[in-house]
Length: 275
Image 1 (cartoon, rainbow, N blue to C red):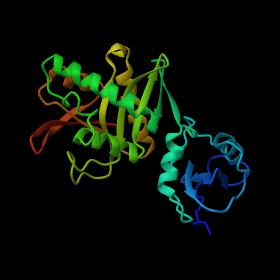
Image 2 (image 1 turned 60 degrees about the vertical axis):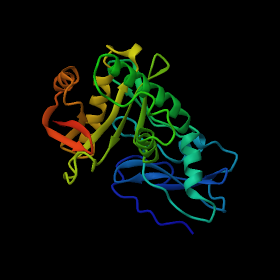
Image 3 (image 1 turned 180 degrees about the vertical axis):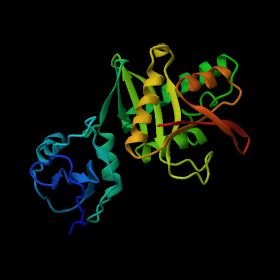
């Protein structure tokens, strides 16, 4: 009835069992440990298993699993499919509701970071558009202002791809959306054929009124920690090859310029730092 899941490397305490299944409002929530990571996945099924359907997702998860990772993280791993009633849409609805949230404190800057929900997309767009306008105002090239807000644009498509892959993040400072980035495990556009030894930062941006408070550097440190925890030797990104300010900024954060790359008419500098 349900796909089999093997719980391996049970390094985190689980209550009451290594793998628990609950149904909340028709969405099956499966929680447990796979490869030493706390996991929440969802699927749609007609049967009700485990917790009563009137329990909240938060209550069901709290009752089913206690995950003790170094940074208190829960990691989403894929979608289980069972039953005929549209697992993909149900999963997007659950993730976008904010009912299950992963949040990390960004050390030293008074900010926190979470995976972006569907409700967060307008805030992410505002931050990216703010950054695009500012970079253009100082005479440098970046994403075209208005491109993230435009339905059907290449930039909007890239943003939604990050969201669909659960790698889009929103940082909050002073209770306001303040920064964003995406963190992929591969980049075939600018690092084609690269070994799977890195994570890749994309679309890192901080709202201008939060500039100068260390948020961008904190996001890079967090991404570097994730890369190291996943056994990656490098953190990589691409940026403008003709902006001395941004190149110097990343060099201060430990990046070295490897070389340059082109995609159609877009020219970028490729940078990496060891984790």
